[in-house]
Image (cartoon, rainbow, N blue to C red; front, side, top):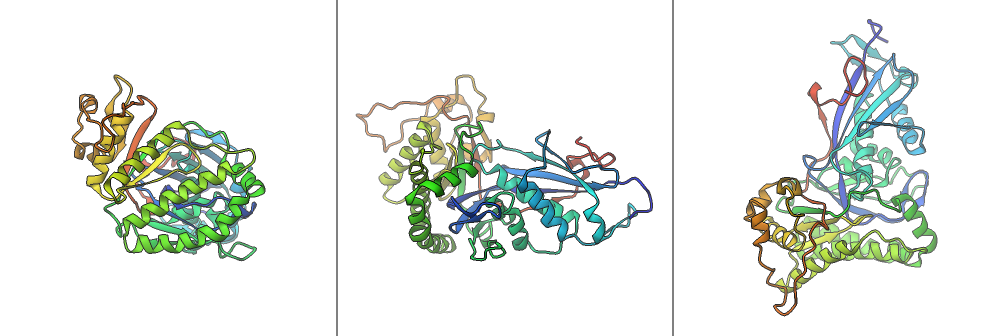
Length: 420
């Protein structure tokens, strides 16, 4: 296997998260994670939201181990085991001449792995951390084991970890095809357009809560499929038409159509959650106030300026048609949802800070001086909801997964294979 007895071979990758604009909610097969409808997502810029994963192999490792955000977690769950089994079965010969390491295809079955993963955003709070996490796990393992399949085939493996993970294997706008085969081989992700196709879009995320949600997506979906008559109508009648319209809107960069579809589909997804027995509440009062703010502005302009979408959580993902609109949106959001007194503006607005500069805001005094948006009627008293938003992330559509080649970016020690 190798000339020298003790060695560690490592690969580090970075994978973005994604936010669905046509939602996936409901499975027709729980173990293979096969959905009841197609879905479409936008990949977010990994410099603002991503998972970094280092995978290592060594003959000295006694069992598979994983650390998530610095804490060791169990790999015994079915989803991890499915991904590890599928990737190991596709492994090829690997040779590292510099280290004098040769791993034959058959050796992978007996070698153990160490995996360290880190999210630069809250886990399990409705920002698709599991999507980025499982996509990164599968992508990095495929590189370590010299798996020959392309990203579309890898997406079918990532899907078995977390459904929406299949969409994080590409940048830009991505479609997850539900497929028809019982074995799930045709339930894969394909890229519709890359991140450069519609690069004037700006995405603002209002992190309303970074707490773990009360009803996980997995159990929520199961309860919906078992109890909601509306979800079957949605999957059969509504989504197929919306997917066709959304593909067209994205390809032609038709923002009014894109916004209408995105907002409608988000609202219907949450309606389906309410139609579940017992009902599931992912959004909260702050989420509803953000919707109201966007709807009022869009109506006053006569054409949509901003689209909103909410996944399984209260956090708002707001997609502005261009940078100018994003600056006006940020002004409105900061007017309604200013930070707590004495807060650091630098940590209240994270990601692409240039949007803050475009909005003409340099410090908290500028936030306090913001006038009420013109669409608010003069005779309506304006309320401010200080501290109801934890922080804002400014980002944009981004690229798919990449390898990180600098050893300093690895999360595991190259000598021991343990977390740094």
